[in-house]
Image 1 (spheres, rainbow, N blue to C red):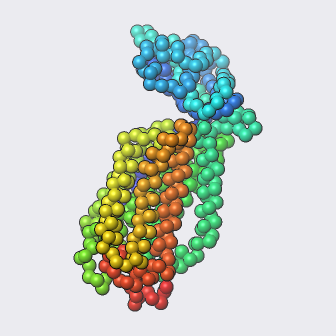
Image 2: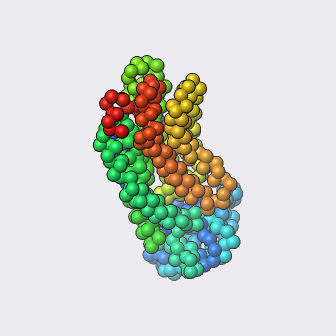
Image 3: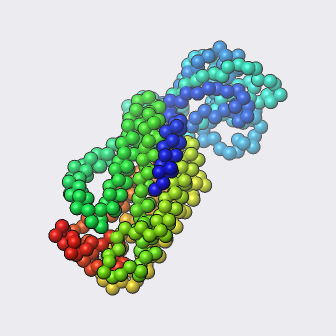
Length: 434
């Protein structure tokens, strides 16, 4: 993994801004003219008693500019073909900004629906008229869904509802698993041996995934109270998840490329361990850098996703990232097919197939879940993909842990001293340890 890539990732993520559901900013006449209505925010309301609160810093200037707020429900691309005045007239609600605070109740939503807020004033559609050099108007938006009691106090949009509880349960599961397995895992890593590198990378990736979940939980806990959260924590969550992703990819590619590039060249008496030949290392590092670049590109091409590492609405970067994962899974499948088809030992075939299950689950869970999410409603897709990928990758790690920590199966397989077996242990050096 490249230290430069990690440093650049951290710098970009930690310097980014987050758009929470308490939104602050400036109403700008010039931007409103260029965009035929300045886009402010998007929020998915559900149920009754949805509320939008708009607070102005300078209501007198807003009156002078004839400022107004436009609310659209499920704003579609057809509006782009309309003239400026027709576009503004299509708004579901038009709110004249003449007071310091405006409250707008959203009508009953039989199913969750996205609403978008745009700003316009007297200069928006008057392209000839010169915009005076007035100061911009500062604003604060509060967007609230009804809570369990029916009161408009929930800052979470419909597609985000439930993620806070999910991260809490995920952290609880991590804590319980850590209490149960930390001691035997520590003892296994202290022993060293051929499994040491794999266990170290697996543990690092799992710890980083736990850090990401913790940062997301802290961010969403604050978000549930003020609608802004802690943007730094959201950015850190994305960063730790990216590092976890590239760590796992480096490990899996190093093992798979070791089989492909050196199988048959090593003597039968020397068990195959972590492969560090120049060719396999170059392939692994190249794959890691490619995935890292695509992950960064995907995060910043999905401007409305707001601190989610996995997105159902796919940009070009997201499509390329999924294609990379599918390609790596096909590469692994071809290698394993060649090995398993010629392998006579049932025990070794089981070893390879179990390893393949963990790898395929890791590589293919995101593309498969994105395809499956099409069958769900719009407000459910983000949660299906986010929760599904995190759970699938956690299960993949558990499968690999069981494979490489299994005293019975792994010892029997490694004792065969096959040249095609990855990460085998020497009978003479490690018999007493296991």
